Length: 391
Image (cartoon, one colour):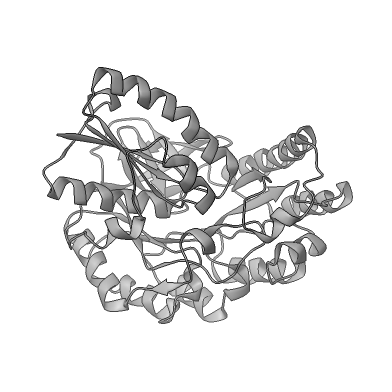
């Protein structure tokens, strides 16, 4: 029996898919190299944006064709699923499984990967106006620190070189996130630590100090802003102002010079005027992000924003996204040019390609075994990465 997993959404979903694979393999399943060879297809879905849900409807047609060729094929859907979507998917999938049912069946072993995800908490208490996470994953539940540290030790022992600590809001971790970061940093071995996603309103000076002092922390941070206008931030229920966000960025850069910054942003939120959008564009020019995940607003059932009038035309949302993307391309290239001539540490992830401590992709001039740390001299800067020669 063979399985194939389709993962949509955030890194939390990818971490869950690792656990789904573990459960299936413990039951005797083997991973199928191609979806057409699978006897079981598992879709680990995301409900944050309607586009992710629409992609599943497109795949259902293909599943029907596969079932004609393999009448024994079974399909399961899991992940972040809204109640209304469960009713619809019940007609198209053989089974709907709560993601928690998969996760609780996993053992302590983990597959050997160069990059691994270690969830430290699930759920969210923030109820941002546009977000479904509190409805699909529930309220915040933090894992015990000892359990997380044990998992990370096992990952390092198995050869993992980059570990992402995951949570819908990692810095509201119940048992003190800066302390956890330091404890993981003290684990023997050569590896990098990253985390996502933090919330600006919960980002403490203690956490910034911990990031600066932990030598295994890779100098990269995703800090979602979502909008660069105070009125829109208030409508989104984000809990901070643009000024507070800017001051936080200033503190982080002062403590960790050269840190690469990315963000998440939504364009076309209900009622967002052109002037309010220009405030977001202004913030992009000021912060000079290395990367940004630019999303066009789509209403999600059950959220506060669903009750607001979605009055921004699709073509205007597309225009606004393009404006931000053009600013991002300029600032990303400008930031990357600063690396030219420098010798930096890299981790090879596939032949001829690696990652830097700042989470930038680098193309290297010759082959080196995957999962090795080495040094490279930067020879060229691209918009979305670097080129270098091994030293």
